[in-house]
Length: 333
Image 1 (cartoon, rainbow, N blue to C red):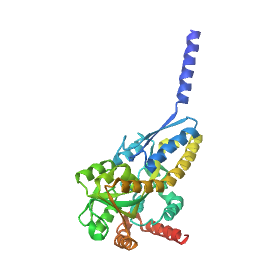
Image 2 (image 1 turned 45 degrees about the horizontal axis):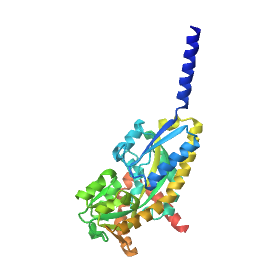
Image 3 (image 1 turned 45 degrees about the vertical axis):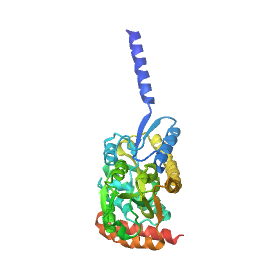
Image 4 (image 1 turned 180 degrees about the vertical axis):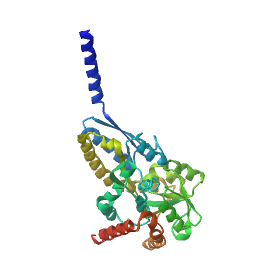
């Protein structure tokens, strides 16, 4: 009887020890290709996190909507089905944190310097804090880049937008932007855009060169206008209950890994977009046109009223703070 007790105790101890050593699993889901700035940033975080925690954490990265589409992923995170996402900032409006749609206002971030001042300063930190009542912790901002317009018709002047069906993310600000241009906005999940362009469900859309190129949208779009009219960035987020429940030392190690991965992702974003634009040119299926300073001024003038249109939704003071940071960045040049 004593031997049985000893064996049972040993088996229990072994099982408890094995359980204690089981790695903490982080499923990191995203909707873009693995070879985009976000995809490479997620992979870099995996490598850094697993190294920093000496295997106590295992990160599984699921790119290209393998697990969830745009509209599903935030709900999955809140339910704990995944532990980490990097959704575009537009996604937080439908979640009820409308302030994030300030990033969608055309030309509100006229330069990388302005973007940096916003994201790394008190304005960016206060925005991430607004996610916590939704059960979400904002860990970092990851850059993608400035958006260009694509279509099967040339888009250069305001009249060229009239009647065109252009895809947007689900954002009231982007809806207002397209209507100000005279286009018909069409909300579609990112994973559905290529087919919609191929079949003519939409005439075109807006995105960064890296997203356009890696999703092969340039193969079904005859024209691309380098307009830099808008910005796509991401917030790397995690489930608050999961994050708060981590051992303090592991959480600290993951914060360090995220900081380094953020630096890496933001450094490569511009290079990836430059290379993607060159790849689109070389493919020869899309005519690439860059707006002249005069044409860009025309776009800016047409789109400036969007700030007034959306100020009740996004926040008048927040828009003003973005404009102040942009002016300060411009003055510091």
